[in-house]
Amino acid sequence: MRKIGLIGGISWVSTVDYYRFINTGVNERLGGLNFAECLIYSFNYADIKKNNDNNDWVSTLSMITEASLHLKKGGAKAIVLCANTMHMIADKLEKAIGIPVINIAAATAACITAEKLKTVGLLGTKFTMEQDFFTDKLKEHNIQHLIPNEADREFIHHTIFEELGKGVIKEETKIKYLEIIQHLISEGAEGIVLGCTEIPLLIQPENVRVPLFDTTLIHSQAAVKFILNETVNS
Picture 1 (cartoon, helix red, strand yellow):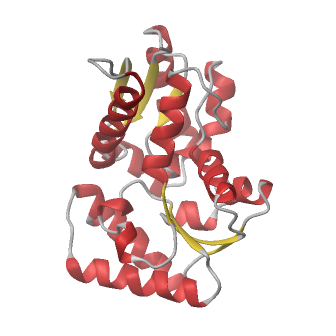
Picture 2 (picture 1 turned 120 degrees about the vertical axis):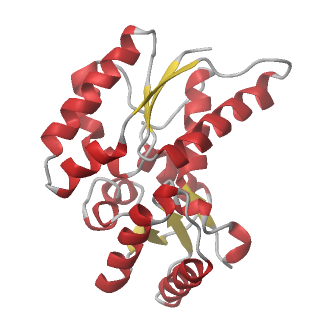
């Protein structure tokens, strides 16, 4: 097995799922008492969010780079950024640290392609929905994407940080998300990408009539493939 480094705390709620999915995935393949060998650097999310709110991605990149180098020094052979939004800096981070950064968008695009879908709805933070770091990976696989209207994007962004990222689950929020998803389906979405690692806490496959792409699970599965030295989309 190869050791990996997890950059977590962005948020801690989804980092717990990464740790569980990765260890479960390794054990399902190898059995017995075999689990992943990994290192975790968990941030105080308030420090990261302050940078992001100020559009100070240079400072965020500096913080993530320093943490990743600590994990590399500890023996990590690849880095897993346990959040979609942090992949805004993934390419620059990979160049800075000299080891692979397993890309959540590339792994998700590969899964969508395997399902032979051409158009998907994308939910996530405003960064993920409005910037091109995630959607460019979809385009590379000839996948079109739809995003909610501005008001709905604002609602999703707000609830990610003020509810889901704190582990707060509200039924009224779930109902609104499902309304947004249904609107995307009516516009032609053949599947829905849960492009924030906290959204799967709220929305499950049985809630939606089209395929859901849980980026937390997909990314964790890509990490398992790396650990076991299998082919991974980067």
